[in-house]
Image 1 (cartoon, rainbow, N blue to C red):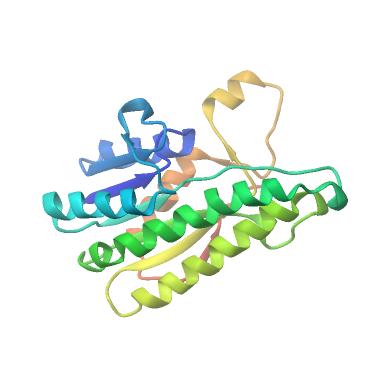
Image 2 (image 1 turned 120 degrees about the vertical axis):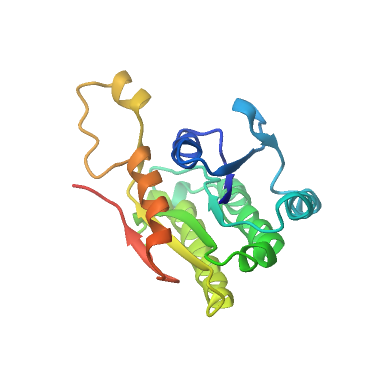
Length: 213
């Protein structure tokens, strides 16, 4: 399979890349930083994203999976302290990059017999706290966009789904705080496994809750 991972240089991206590469799939990792061997593409640049889609189409003709892991977090102690500059940043990271990728890659995903698209959302989209107003709103918007994308894919063999976490944890975080329990957090390797499992189901437009208490 041909798998595109957006935000591939972060811990979650590395786990997903490792999961699919170890299974022998062709993995195209994209990250603005270009770190860890990823392609340096600014997903806020729609022309750059469309060029990426053209290049992948020319080489592979399709995309079998797109895992959108571009993220970020900003928050405040109280609702009144919310900074609208944080909203601007989160809108770009969580919503605008998603829009660019889905609009540019829809034809390539449909060209696959079993194309799969996934984003990672957060419990904050369901019940945002006052300090998470901007973050929760951006996550909710990204979910709505993904569900609209799922509707566009209905009947094509391709699907789009949402994986919900409280937060993510990785080996480095555990080693840095061995006494911490990380209740409700989802390990990045478990996230990668859940994404891999999307090829075992035809579910489309669903929210899969990965939180663990």
